[in-house]
Image (cartoon, rainbow, N blue to C red; front, side, top):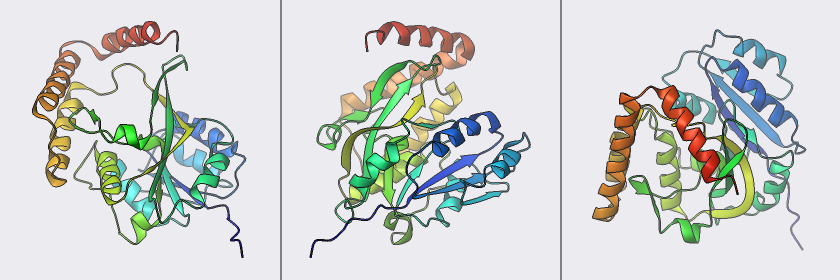
Length: 280
């Protein structure tokens, strides 16, 4: 007898803190999805700007939420993980926008029979600038990606375009390391791809804002520290020249961010993006 594939429940986990304007954008994006098997979890860090009131007004599409003080985004995600009822999980930030109204319905057909061969299924992310102009793509087939490096780590699927199977959190009992403040998503993706090779689906999942230099000089230095820790934990050794060449570029970017005002750097970088990708 031929087995009938069922539409999987997709869990979305979002952390917020004083993000009322950004969250309203994500609410519209999720509300407009034509896929109904969605569980949306919001973990708020005790916001005082109206975020909680906005959540209350949209409880019809929010399955679980709480608002209490936390230790950061990864602590919030860990709280959300405890309430997963779906088969596949994606983490969307406040302000994230699903690429189209049928993103989840398109992905559902691929997710329905992906497990147990795959515990990570990912698509593409459309990178946009401040004017909502598409400037770059993020995400390519694993056959190409697995042989590359990004920054001072191995190349990984784009986290905003990645769906992790619930077994990753329930059976393997994975939690994001709260000792990491920036690279926790890198840690989860590396854990997943080392366990099993992921499946790439050539579908745009998310729109991600690339508005200027996205991190401060201080955060760039923290990224270096955390990525070194992750490489050591997973016994990752990049080629000597590639590692130190990429490391030097991060240090230069951090120095520029520290010396020059962030607004000036961001404005110049946005202008550069418009010129570089104007024929995309």
